[in-house]
Image (tube, rainbow, N blue to C red; front, side, top):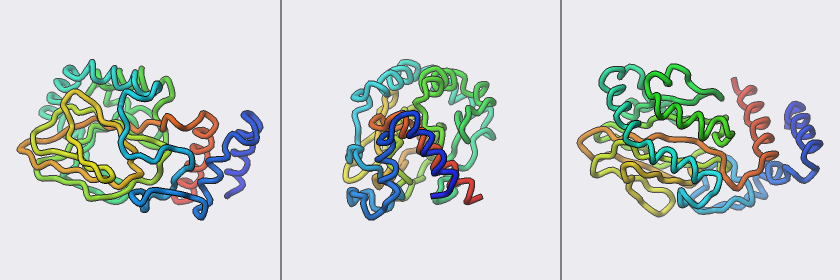
Length: 248
């Protein structure tokens, strides 16, 4: 660990107690990590987090109000998205995953680089408002990641992959869903139901496809995993921020 990480970790332990971030420190010891075979390509697997790919969107007290708010506002979000897609299509960029750039996978960002994307408030006002009030202000979003409308064009697919870690969790709000679209996480495939949410641990291998005749759009939100604690979240921000600084 760099001196900056050690200093940051020590400050957190001084505030919350010496054992408050033990799981984060254990995560950094790759020899001590126990993981599912489906998580083999994830960089970090923090111990003590449930090793299951799919979660009930309503099972976690921290996340259930977020799910409810987006599902209740689905119709307004869908109308605004349709307007944006037809009138401001240039606001949607080719999606840049940490593994690849994909032109048939388009994204409209609401939160990125640790902050709301202010210009998206005009493009998608309802989604932006719900996200800000229910996710950003209460500190439920993982600031190391993002929230965006994810649009797979007809015929597009996302190749099987694991994301980097298991201490955040991915919420999919199904906005506009044609037939013949699905997502596999671990060994189970599910379909999006328009107006409802899916919640899954994306450290597990996953893939998605759109075999339909029009674009498939979900709103993706990277939330803190509900089984992480406040001091752990602070330590993880210190850790990942410093690593990213060194990689620039």
